[in-house]
Image: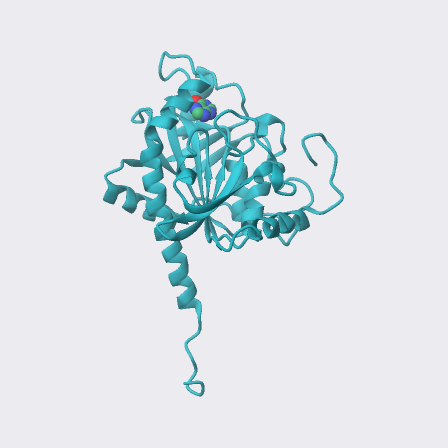
Length: 301
Ligand code: HPA
């Protein structure tokens, strides 16, 4: 079902495959790691070398974002010689898209051969230790969006009907992120993300409730993509940039411009961390692949 309520005749797997083929026809690079850049966090994509940039509007079946601070294009280039796909901007459930549509670009990444995705977002800080500008690697999430990208008929080519979600955010990728942050002198917290439907920000009572339930940060994205990514076997790392203290934690009212401004101020830090983390993840995937190749047998030697 699309945002206007009509069902497309072509099945989603075929559409995701077509979109993936279209994207790969524009570049010789074959990224194994992708990053999704949230509100005001797009600078990483601008720093890629030799990149092609494809507006979402040109990619078959791709949803388009109308949110200020979301460029709405896919960049494929290299970071420290590592091929990377960067989605500059995403669509949200609050824009009227279904969670399935929100997750479509993630499924396209998987069809492109991407094996790990780094999801970034702007979030409100609930944990009392978090200041605006803090970075938080997600250890888990609470899905309060009252929807799920896997709702509706399941296509087993994407993955199982009832996928396990006991480790949505890869422990090993998080360990890499924590190590690289330490090496670069960047503070990186670990916390639980509560996904709200939006677009209104939360009330102070909602934030108190979320805190009681174990949330450290709150936002309006990431979870549909993370669920779809896990179903289809992608490894997920997610990093929130705390752009504001959540409602009621500070006496300031919340405004999108402030969220954008703090995101802007933290972008260099996040961009440096992303470059280091993506390089390590790429190496890790390459090493696993080499180790997976069976040793030559005696006869073949
Ligand atoms: N709440 C929800 N989403 C957000 C926030 C917030 O406080 N800040 C940035 N995105």
